[in-house]
Amino acid sequence: GENVEQHPSTLSVQEGDSAVIKCTYSDSASNYFPWYKQELGKGPQLIIDIRSNVGEKKDQRIAVTLNKTAKHFSLHITETQPEDSAVYFCAASSTGGFKTIFGAGTRLFVKA
Amino acid sequence: DSGVTQTPKHLITATGQRVTLRCSPRSGDLSVYWYQQSLDQGLQFLIQYYNGEERAKGNILERFSAQQFPDLHSELNLSSLELGDSALYFCASSRTSASTDTQYFGPGTRLTVL
Image 1 (cartoon, rainbow over the protein chains, first blue to last red):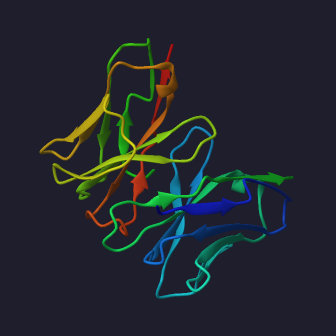
Image 2 (cartoon, rainbow over the protein chains, first blue to last red):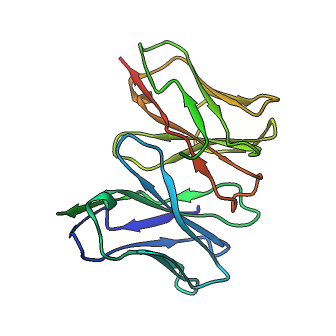
Image 3 (cartoon, one colour):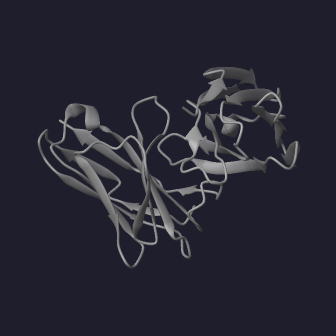
């Protein structure tokens, strides 16, 4: 069945460094890839998304890249800050599909 | 604030009991999704409703059921509760029924079964 693998499961970086989280999907029909940030005790919040007609999208310190041939997409956070510490989830879905598949999550720690 | 509301925030109950979780979607959203998140786990899709009708089903147990009402709010009913049902339950909403439509999540209900 459809699957989204997310790596790493835990990531620790120093404040100011960059963080990269990678996801691989199995359904070649997938064409929508959102990223969510979940802070402790809160629901997941959409931080950025990308559709398959573009290869990269940027929003201030956050960027997402998509490689449809390799079926993987990545989240890049530059100049990390302590408030970036959270669990990040990638997800994939397809037009005509019936559900969104989420990765297992990456716990990001940003050390001050 | 996503605009999705969930009540109650916390729920503590005993094994064998039945509870109801409530969700109100964002204004204008017609789809409601329910997810279960166990401790340090990912998001497990349970069920989706669109404009009052069941649209898609995931890993939802037979002891669980849901419905969406004419005013578009949704309820998730959990019965014959077991210790393993303790988890965070999230509701999300989107504008349409399409799986490629952005989902906005509520703050969740933390269920503890003792």
